[in-house]
Image (cartoon, rainbow, N blue to C red):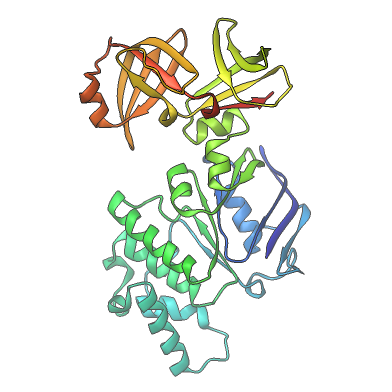
Length: 350
């Protein structure tokens, strides 16, 4: 559907470096990266606001690398909405139909149907200055969607919204996607990426460093940067050793962790998600092959539970429920056992 082939662009102090990926028809594709990673520049390049120094962009098999913005059938919604303040909501939306062959009645019918889809039909006579941030974002989406773009580009669309408005707009974006709209959405928020995308590419310093499904990227990060960026805090440099047909990751030559892997590389990294760790007051019998005792050093409220940091010779981050905190009577200084399966541990070769 949309294919970027080795797109490069030089700026003072920054470079898009041979970026390649494909957004298939019907994808909700997330481009995930920190501020300054090159996400917005890449969107502007796809839209035609910036021309690459090298590489090609194809849309439905057509080379659009040098094509004019208005001929690309790509819609871009900016983070700051870019709504015309002197026009009404209706006038903002219909503005996108200037230059088409539609008559006045047809244009107004399209405005009404698009505004109804976006839940803003009752706002058509209002001025932008009277709208909330969420309403402005819906107007910006309507103004772009009325053009029926083959690909909808979203530049941090939820960044300036509060939690309630974010949830509301996420639901709206899922609705648009379910109706068949192909979307390329850039964000720095990995929870946003996880809740919306069916494909994710992680960009750092102008380079795509990992691409895959949300499960592949979030459960199996391929680098220390991706692991930390997507919230995986148990990431350790290890030496892989084999004993009696079993594999172990040796951390700092003293902590030995059982791993299920066929990898033969000696040096690499161990990744363990906090939610795959179980805590208990006593050593318990289970199928977990990794069992360590340690002391609780910190207890931190998290978005999806409570993060408990334990010292087992290294710092391990466990993510448990609030109920478990009370059931186990966990406080800072508590002595606990931690347990996790060998299959929960991921080995990444260096």
